[in-house]
Amino acid sequence: MAIAGRRRIDSIRSLGMEHDLQLRAAARAIYNACYPTEEWAPCGFDEAERFGTVHYRQAVGAAQEARWALTSMEERQLLLSVVI
Image 1 (cartoon, rainbow, N blue to C red):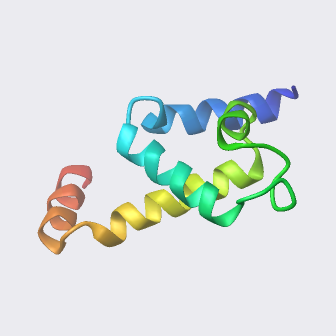
Image 2 (tube, rainbow, N blue to C red; image 1 turned 90 degrees about the horizontal axis):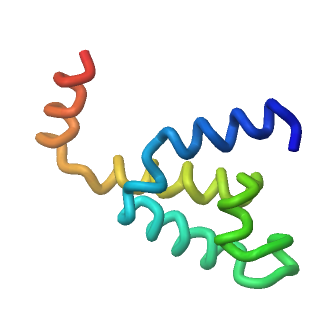
Image 3 (tube, rainbow, N blue to C red; image 1 turned 180 degrees about the vertical axis):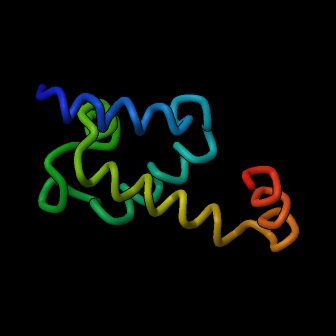
């Protein structure tokens, strides 16, 4: 695998996906809903995760956006105050 591709996978892993079981479950649900068969994606979720495919990265991004959308305004303000 190319070095740039490896870095991208490492950066996804550094987001906490391997330790954030809720986010991983959401990404899996989104992946399976959007790519239900091999006609839509070349492999299943586990293999896509291992190789960091574009389909996997899109599902992770959607899961992260869904998490943010489902976070209450109070929680958002608290998170932003901690970051800033």
